[in-house]
Image (tube, rainbow, N blue to C red; front, side, top):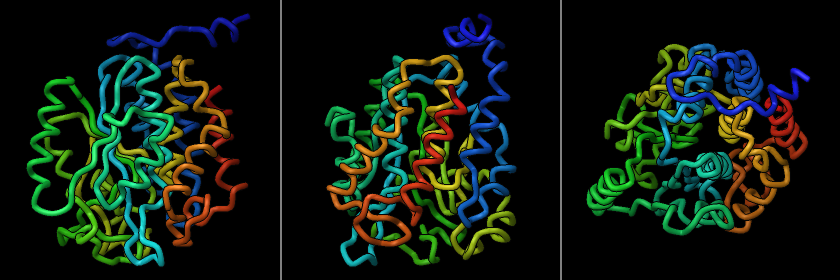
Length: 314
């Protein structure tokens, strides 16, 4: 009987200590999401322990209600250049979850990644909730328009997931250490607008990784001294792949009482979004080909982790 009562308990209100009872469960979700696939995520996660709980608690308490969710990692050197599949699935899931619990969210990327981002948002978000930063000199005008949207809609949070940011030399670099500034809009500037900031990443070069001491990334990650992003966020969710980090955030909302997001815990939801991304040209970011896999992981590896995180939340 006690477990049945617990399962239907309403989310904690702002200022309540009740949500801290879920800290052990969310900590298990965080540890599972950080399962290492070869980039040192389990070690890097220890520098941000507790941040998944803090990030989710903001939305459970109502402290955060509306967010920009920023993603898109372009791969210019692939045979058919496009954005990778890691990031857009998790970003779209986060947007859907925030809207499901009564808030609102906008999916943000740049013109290079636009086809894949719009593919991810298909069937999930209205078109006017996909914001695309332009190429070239018109970025500042776009940013001014985004600031207006933030003020009009009372947006309070920006979440970066698998979005590359500047390294110590000021240039965004991919996992191979290659400077990709030419194909990357400076969306890290959204971190300096006074909104609450949350980062999700897996390789050290994503916006938010400035939250971690640079020596850790330099020592653990290949090319870490070249690629480590210097832009911090107030909370950082480190995962084996970033889509797992996005799913961990949504699973934490569920674990802390928001049963409205139950549909997002289903493997088929994730398969559907990934299929749309692939149809739009999205790439496996490790294999650099247009197939419905993520970060070089087999389908079994990838979806077994999605399902394991969902199970921990229930």
